[in-house]
Length: 66
Image (cartoon, rainbow, N blue to C red):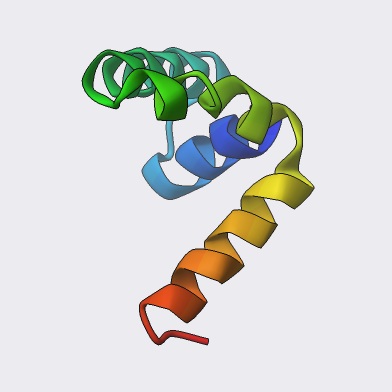
């Protein structure tokens, strides 16, 4: 989650506290909109950045990006 907050702060120029609120709002939105099995994994992905990097790499390979 810290990486997400930092990325939001860096890309938007928001202070860290506001970036955290923005990230939390987006996560809640995604959890409401995504199918339950996927939504249930969001917190796990954010707590384990290595897993998120692996998933990103797999998705990139799936769509032909390297």
